Length: 96
Ligand SMILES: [Zn+2]
Figure 1 (cartoon, protein in one colour):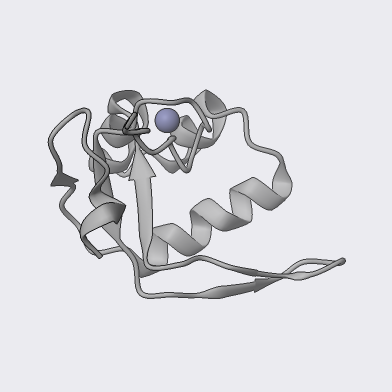
Figure 2 (figure 1 turned 180 degrees about the vertical axis):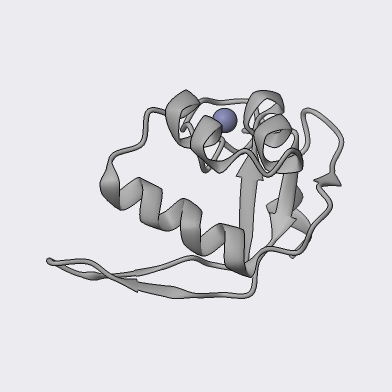
């Protein structure tokens, strides 16, 4: 069985290595409500931006549109500081 590592929730690239715990939040977009879930996965690059609280840099790196920028603003206000590492090649969702 192949274990698929989570993709990064910011830039959508494969290879997330950490997640951040999030107090779930909702955004009202013009066409739908968007729900955050309770974890945001991050690749090494996006994790660096989060650790530095460089939100503009993160939005630029991940090439996010205005709705994506709203998601990041919500994340900024709702995440618990401190990335949670997991073993590469494992799926941390499997133990939930
Ligand atoms: Zn990323």
